[in-house]
Length: 125
Image 1 (spheres, helix red, strand yellow):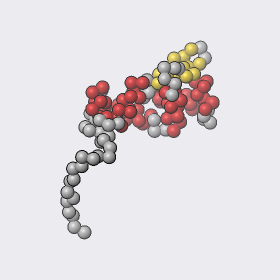
Image 2 (cartoon, helix red, strand yellow):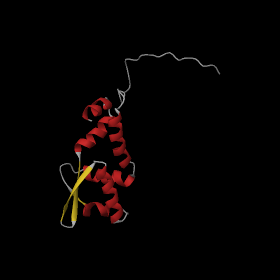
Image 3 (cartoon, helix red, strand yellow):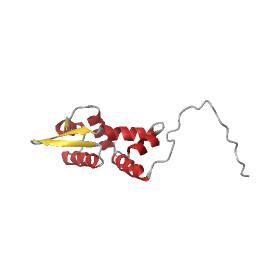
Image 4 (cartoon, one colour):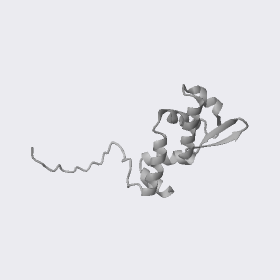
């Protein structure tokens, strides 16, 4: 089999915009990788979706734990991972802990994967 170069054909009718238009900076890549790593677990992804789906509101851990088959300590561990990744924050009130999503971080993750994502993320880091 011979190696032939294929001609590059410019098309004005692109089906979709490129996801990234420029490479991520090192700092942006490190920051995003930590957040995506935290989301690489189905339980944590569900936890974040339960918390983020109530924008502007806090969610008590007592509302989150019954949604899962895992034990309360396991859910607390997953919430800690999300918190350390900067995706959520919390406040203890008596015996309960209330969680909320950090919208700016969620927007950064979304922007990194959307059209012209790298430009908007590198500008924010």
